[in-house]
Amino acid sequence: MRNRVDLDALATARKIRQYRELRLRVIERQRSALLSARATGRHDSRVLEKVLDTLDAEQLMVELRTASAVDDG
Image 1 (cartoon, rainbow, N blue to C red):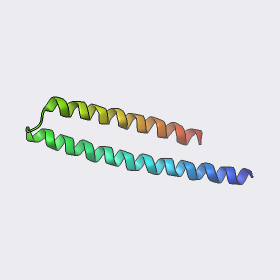
Image 2 (image 1 turned 90 degrees about the vertical axis):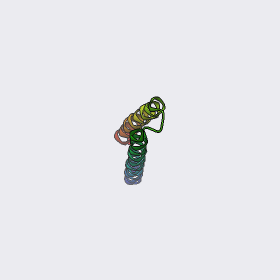
Image 3 (image 1 turned 180 degrees about the vertical axis):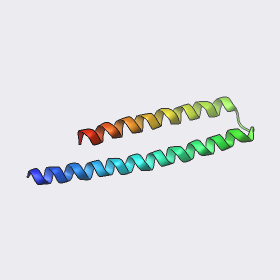
């Protein structure tokens, strides 16, 4: 039984790491697109800054939540 619990914990930790890697890649691509849009000067830079701030917050949340979930698992 202990062995099964260990395997389940490892599988869960692996899924959390995969989610984290994928989500962080998506955030980075979103950030890159927003920075490119800002560079054109055709979009309101204040709006883009707010969205970039939101991405920063989401990145922090993903990093903290997934790190603690893997540590707990």
